[in-house]
Image 1 (tube, rainbow, N blue to C red):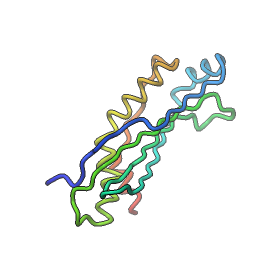
Image 2: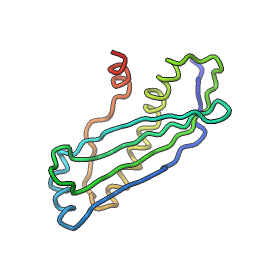
Image 3: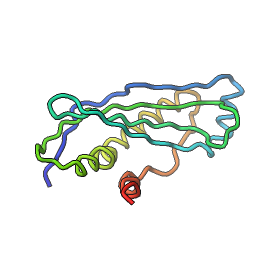
Length: 140
């Protein structure tokens, strides 16, 4: 199967790390198993059949009453659509599934490195995000 798109460039568009105090960091370290990764994907068309895809990862504790920390990375990927006759649903699958599966390992590694360097040296993310499964669940 020939590629229907190619990645032109990708970069960290925005990065937010908020640890309000030393006590917050201690609380975060103690509650890190409760933290969950949330993913949000947006896209916007650019000129010359290119698309900017913004993948946002937020790593937060859903059980927290008070916010002790906030971690978020916005990762932009610009793709060139090679198939001029691509259908809307195929394009959707590329943006939400195929591209995400391709870029996620590198994105997760970058995010993990930044968080480890921000005071969470022992951090390991839990289960991997299954973009194929998320995409299929969306269709149902």
